[in-house]
Amino acid sequence: MSARNILVINCGSSSIKFALVNEAQTTFPLQGLAERLGSPEAVLHWQFGDTKESLSLPGTSHQSVLSKILPLAQEAAGGHLDGIGHRVVHGGEHFTASHLVDADVLAGIRANAHLAPLHNPAHLVGIEAAMELFPSLPQVSVFDTAFHQSMPPHAYRYAVPEFLYTEHGVRRYGFHGTSHRYVSKRAAEMVGVPVENSSWLSAHLGNGCSTCAIVNGESRDTSMGLTPLEGLAMGTRSGDVDPNLHSHLARTLGWSIEQIDRTLNHDSGLKGLSGLSNDMRTLYEAHMAGHPGATLAFEVFCYRLAKSLAGMACALPKLDGLIFTGGIGENSAAVRERTLEHMKLFGFQLDAEANARCTRGVGGEIQAAGSPRILVVPTNEERQIALDTLALLDA
Ligand code: AMP
Image (cartoon, rainbow, N blue to C red; front, side, top):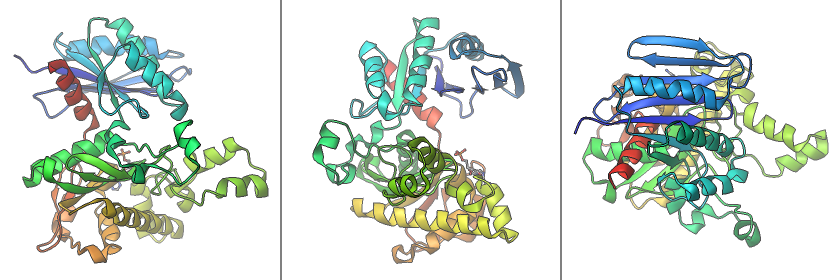
């Protein structure tokens, strides 16, 4: 059988990210992004091999841009596209694993739309458009939340009245599950321990950031909650604040719920603290040049990360290693170093040379002799979505 091709689609409210994954190739034969959909500036960018192209598509809809992406994918796959894998943010308690899309799965994604009002409706548009354009291709939905459905109640329940959980679904769901699952499996392979008898702390540090405790291939706790706002300080999200901050801002400043949501989700985190940028590269350069806001943002980010990882350790029976992933986790030796300086009781010691070497897609172990393992593991959510799609095709 020749190597199979899966198109992976991440359909957002005004953008579609896509990649063609070939099971035998480490790089993507085709990848791209359609952004600002529905606006006069809508544009489709893609890279096919070494060739980069862009097409302006003013006012175009999700459906019509997908009708352009699918033939590109067919061509890049040499006419042999085997399936489509869709990233879906919120599966609620309905979905504990990836699923072949059918009417029940579509209804389940719709039923969870109130938990991810910006994301799930956009995913449905993408899935339904792809099903219409390619009715004979199997489609699979892969949920960011599914991996965390193995958390025990003491990790996922909030200490609020029970009916808010039983009648309204108020609980910790967690996100970035596809990434935490992928990197913990990779880490086990890299160090040669069986994943079904392994324990990891994982830090996914991108523009969104979360930590996870993973035991025997299952999530036991994670820092994001009902929504992706909870937990670490992130690019533009505040992460944890006093829950009374909402009523305080409403009472003292007269802010609306929308204004509070916007501030905590889009104007906080690294961006809010530094007054400069949500981008860790920019902030680190500014920090080194003496910008006080950038220094504060860097310090808060690393301390909060260390504190969250230390808390996650409560869910582990042993520690096989600490994993750094995501744009910051994979690239910033300085964030890794500063974070571990706050975790002295764990005995982590970095090998400075190995830490500096792990950047731009280079992964590996970065601890000094005698230290618990510390690993940089490049994440690959697209590949994990393709692997799930292939596994369901085979089943
Ligand atoms: P992601 O959402 O995973 O693409 O990660 C985005 C974040 O990774 C941004 O904050 C970037 O500044 C950060 N990042 C990417 N490359 C580097 C780097 N070389 N050093 C520090 N941060 C980086």
